[in-house]
Length: 113
Length: 116
Image (cartoon, rainbow over the protein chains, first blue to last red):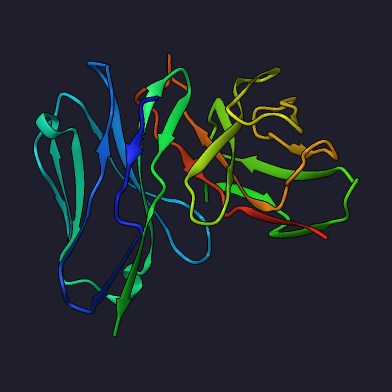
């Protein structure tokens, strides 16, 4: 199966620390899309970013940044100067086409004040 | 405001009962999805619908049924045949372009179902 692996089950940091969430995916496809979602305690998944397989430029949005490396099949997510409101479960996902999306198991991030 | 609504937020069911979870979207999206989330796990696809009056089984469809009579609505019924229905259920929608490979899915707030 073409999996999405988030090896970190839980991460705990102190406020203002930087933290990187890892995501490794498997694919035999040339064209694919990768996603990150945030799931706060309320439960709703919030879309953060979408990248396609042809665009390896890193992306920065405020305190969030993403590093996409096809050579290592990784799409890592970094939060700079973490805040308590960043506490959530973060999911990495990959679209396979045919209306199917493969989600990783998620990484639970605790940010302590 | 455009978005996806799910009701109820919490649902309790006795064993042997069927229950229906509601999902409505006003994003004008063609595609809709139902996922199940168990503690500490990712999302697993139950059913999806590309267009009105059409739907397809996902990875864990046994014990569930759906209908898609209107573009904006995609209700999920959890039947008594579902052996372990206690879980968090998330509905999502996407534009539904072509094979959907570039689609972003947008999610509702979820329904937490508990079987007593």
